[in-house]
Amino acid sequence: MNWRFKLSCRLALLRGPLLAAAALAACSSDRPLSTSPSFDITAPSVGSVTLTPTVLSMAPGDTARLSALLRNPGGETILGMAVTWATNAPTVAKVSASGLVTAVTTGNATITASAGGHSGTAAVTVTGSMVPVASIAVTPATNTLTPGATVQLAAQLKDASGKLITGRTITWTTSSSAVARISASGLLTGVAPGSATITASSGGRSGSASVTVSAVGGGGSGGGGGTGVPGNIYNWGFEGTTDAAASGAFVDSHNLPFIGAS
Image (cartoon, rainbow, N blue to C red; front, side, top):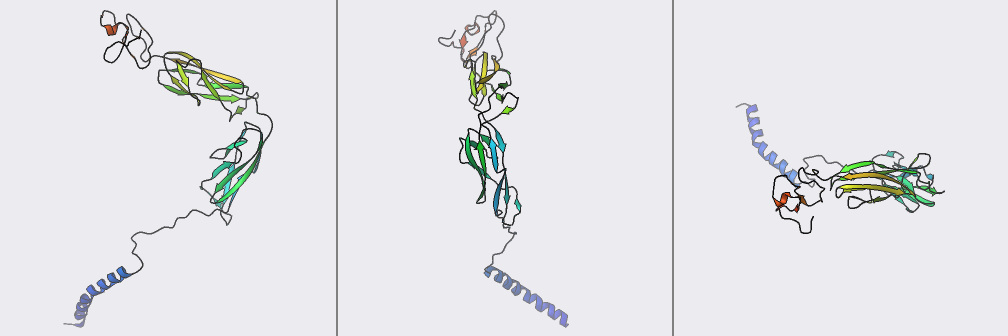
């Protein structure tokens, strides 16, 4: 038996205890074993918030867009961080979540943009009288729908020079709520067959749209036709039949006449 063979045998005998000792040392270590890399992700530190422009002179009804520039303490630009917008005088000037300022009435307001514990401001001065509304156009101008169907209407306000006016309050009305309803936001809903006029008003001016509500399926053929009332079931006179449900009477799903219907 040569020395190389003897050495390999001894190493084989020592291999098991050495591996066990290494495993024991790893288990007793204060540092936990990690099977995946860890990442330390922290939000960037904000050093300053600057608004552009810093001064706005507006008339009631005007709108203007502000932008916020965020920098870290080293002066580098920060991108993608959420900004919170606020106004100290919403009756003078409002600001949206995206920094759109709308002048409401004469006066002064301060718009503030905040992020990461820092903020920047812009001064808003609203002067002059509100630009008069010269015309209102309602779209779509013509509408045809069935009972229960809805259409969103929009009103476009313009001044005497044709410039679009935004930020004004619009009042919606209908000439016949039994035919068509209109919500405060301009959502048109068909109620019953017939015709109606929808009107949008603001600043002493108005615009209108027409609506025609048609019965689902229209009138039948034969002994009689008619217009329906939503929620009722109709059988409009089939020629040659004597069934009470086919005489033009109002009947329910069980073919029973509605009391008081005619």
